[in-house]
Amino acid sequence: MANSSAGAGSTRNGQRHTASRRRPPGRTGGTRTSAPVATAIAPPPEIPGAARSALVGVLLVTPFVLIVAGALIAGLVLVGAGIVIAALGLVLAAGDLAFGRPERLAARLRTRPADPVADARLINLVDGLCVAAGVSTPALGVLEDPAANALLLATRHGALLVCTTGLLERLDRMELEAVLAHELSHLKRGDASGAGLASLACGALLPFLPASARLVARLSGDEREALADVAGARLTRYPPALAAAIEALAAGPMRPR
Image (tube, rainbow, N blue to C red; front, side, top):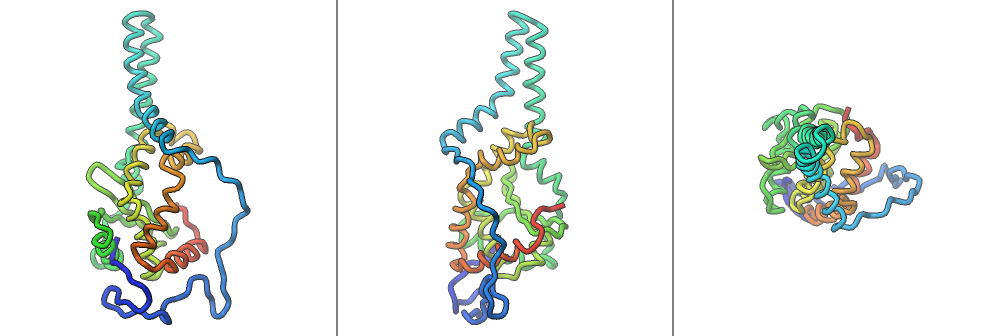
């Protein structure tokens, strides 16, 4: 993520910002506003880290276990039953690779590479933040969609950071920097790789079970978003920008079409 940030009165990207010029989050005129508060719902119990890793491992090896078991059963006991079990393992393995790999998700998004001119602000912010965070600069993609959202994918060729045009248009520079710092914090913490493994493990389920996306999120770690918020705010050193970005995003659609 792009430029490192300092507190009030510091220089960012060649421009002098003072506390008086910062737009206080959630203020319109003299009245403080805030994002709508959802009805409190008890969250599901958190899955312990060891249990998450074990479950992801089991889901990853299950197709291969079925293939081997089916081959043994077909050769030693019942040919028909063995073929069915092996075929089920092959279908699961093919589904995981077809729907769960981050590369396939990136391809389905149909993003365009960030343009050095049109998306100069995005590129500049990401470059500066990556230097500050000590991470390699990810590939940047832009999704033409009015919804405001961002996604970080860890692929075999490196990380891919996708931003929608709605996100780039709706947020000012400081708010966008806060969101990018959040996403790059996922990269620094290794969350993107963990989410990629969870997605691969559940790939065969993704097209058929709506709840499978929530399962991927649970297996990736329930606490990762809050920790990325903290790490991102520490990276920019200006937490109010993230609060302002959250309020701005809450005012419009966030799900890409």
